[in-house]
Image (spheres, rainbow, N blue to C red):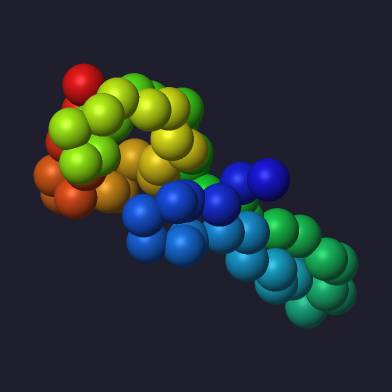
Length: 61
């Protein structure tokens, strides 16, 4: 679901660690935005992370 079509960044799993060092499961999700991009002269919608949008890895339509 939350996966960047450009760089492949997706959900990462780890642990919440409390002050008493008890561990519970948690996840970090990529900040995905649905944007229109130019790809080979055609416009299409893509799910892209904000890091790729900021670094100009995609050409927005």
